[in-house]
Image (cartoon, rainbow, N blue to C red; front, side, top):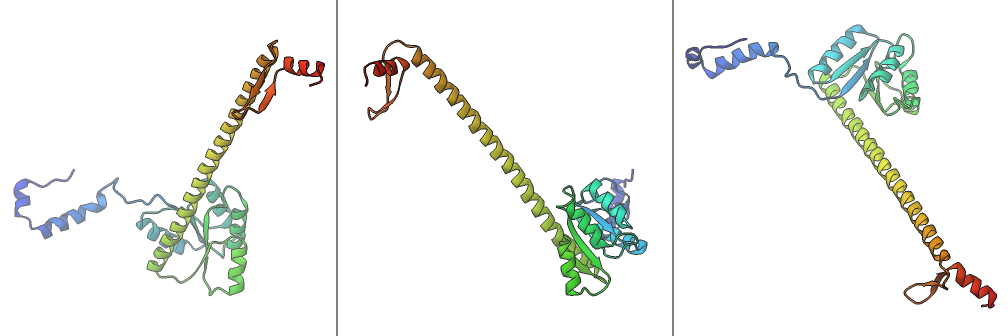
Length: 232
């Protein structure tokens, strides 16, 4: 526990107090800013992987690291990240194949995937990437500020898509519940009609049910029998 005596505090200027506070900030625990977003970072270069992960963590993102395609697929299925920054060149499976695999998996098909390329992207390559499910393309080298800005933009899209999907799921559940309720009401009405008809037919008197305009809606069995006997 760090503290300063009141007498000493009175002698310190605001500037000196600020300097002292800044010195102790790195030791404060439990107040780290987090965005709640999870990013899967995939790159076969340990240097790039470590540096980019550090940059993203400084922005409050939770970062999961993978240096090959197989681990990328496994971690994506396990953690369901909000965004995958996927290097196109990997030691086992190239990034496009990883992307294609994840987009074909119902569990991970919704995950936003950005392909990272170390060379200038040919339009045909970019088209091929989009055909395999990539949501975005980034070309290296990329400035840290641009990477952060692009990451924020992609996460806004990812979060909006996820919010819309959750809303549609909720609305679909509500519609199914309403449909089930209507079916139950219709079944109850049908049972009520059958019960009312059975009571009506059990009566020996000639009974007819009319609507508000005086039109006969139905008659009981006694009425029908009377009509058959009298040809009416």
